[in-house]
Structure formats: structure tokens, C-alpha cells
Length: 241
Image (cartoon, rainbow, N blue to C red; front, side, top):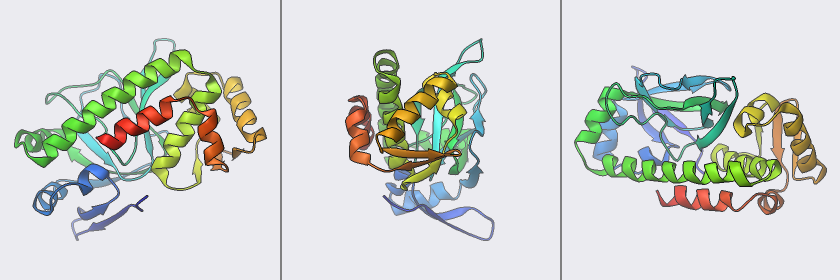
């Protein structure tokens, strides 16, 4: 996996990016024009990128980290419907002034490249490679949401946790990353005790090590065997985008 790197001009705007797959796929002439509209942003773990039904003022191209899309409920609980990493975009609006019925929150700290929504929609309106890439990714994101809905309904907590850890491992490009019990519980829609039990089972099987909010992937192949088939399905959908 590529290591994210961003070169900036004196005004702080990125001129060359290696990390986000959509941006990296742009032809050089389009890339230069698009990059002039981007601003680097650092997101700490648990940072809310936008709230449910909030007017979207910016879109984010993640370079590192993991951002979770969750459906919030009136009782304060929530469940994850998709995760986004360096393969995609966070906050794609259908129209200017539009919103989404999900909340976006950083689960693993990282960096994004932010673009004003109006500018983003104007770039899409030109057609061309960027519009095609965004359309393909949006379709893949809907596919991930559909698969996750079935997974949340049918598969065990250990299977879903393994899927989430594998997808995060793909995106961060390192065996060690930080995630709290609370964040995992919100992601899976599970109580803290259930998360602790599932993490303990994976740790007892020597698939992971978890200590003080830090997960270490010890046996990826073993984790894939524990995970449900949804991991392979979602990964294939995203790779095709």
C-alpha cells in the first residue's frame, strides 16, 4: 500500500498527493487544477466530520485514517453503515446545499484533503475523468452500504468485528492503529461488554493484541477466516470502483 505524502506550495495547498486513489487516478492536467482547490486537514480520532442532515459545505478525500458513516437513533445509539478510507470520498452531495442522513466520524486518526462543496459540484459538472471516478465510487459505496446492512443483521459480533479490523488494516497500511472500545461499540452497534468479549476472543486466538486503545494485527489470514464473507465482497466492490 502506498504511503501518504503531500507536497505543498507556500500557500499551504497541496500540489502533489500520493494516497487517495481517486485523486491519484486523475490525469496530470486535471490533477493540477483539482489540487489547487484542496486544503489539507488533520482529523483526530472521534472527530465529527459532519452530522446527520447537516448541510454539506465540504467534501473530503481521505489520505490516511478511517472515517465511519453511522446512522444515529433517537436514544443516542448508532450503527455503522459504511467506512471510507483512501479509496474514496466523504460527504458527496447530490446538490448544492444538500445533506445526508448519516453522521461521518473519524474512527482512526488521519489526514484528508478538503474541497468546498460548490467547487466540487462545479468540477463534476464539467464531466470528464473526475466525474466518472466519483460516479463509480458512489456506486461502490452504495454497494458497501447494502452489504453492511445485511452483515449487521445476519452475522455475529466476532465476524463483524473481524471484518471491520480487516478493512481498517487495508486502509491504514500498518499492523498497529488506535481505536477505543467505545468507538468499536458505536461502530458495531454493540454494548461495551460485548465488544470486550469479542476482542478477548480474537486476542485469545492470537489474531490480534489489544492494549490501551491500540490494536495490533498479529495474524491477518486467521482474521480473514473468522470474518464473514462480507469482507471479501466489500473489498471486491471497492477495488472495482
